[in-house]
Image (cartoon, rainbow over all chains, first blue to last red; front, side):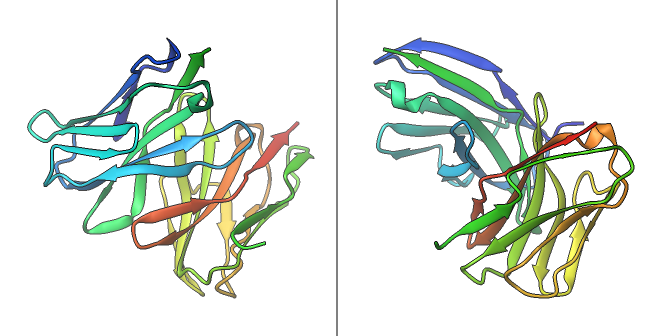
Length: 113
Length: 110
């Protein structure tokens, strides 16, 4: 059973659009929610992360929205660019075992010029 | 170069053979991890290590063996490879909350 469910599996947007990737979890013990970005042939790299004490976090064009009651969080990419085309993974970890990351299944984003 | 290196980058082997994937980090991070990446499953944790000589199972440890005699190295061994172990394998190390991933090894088991 997948601990973190991610959707959609793939996404195509035009340059300047705002792609939104959603993740949901069941385990209320999760308290750290990172997003990783992966380019073809490369390993994932941390993009942005949030803890449940805030509902939103922005870093440049990337924003995480967090809804603790719904157990959902999402990634928004403002003014998306072709260079943002990559696979995005959400993840979650627990305070009592912060070394175990549970990853979503990934979303392949294609930003068309 | 600083960071995490993995070798080989590509490997083709046959069912039943033993295969070892190498991982080396230059940072001296205590924690290291092995994941496999399969379409539709994202990244799944195979094993992790908190320090030299300390290892623990992740989500999908069956068929894999790890060791960590030195902080900087964390090899993953498939003792008798099966076709279901065809995957891309990523090694990672952790500093504070961030995991840093290597470039991956694409393993094909025929």
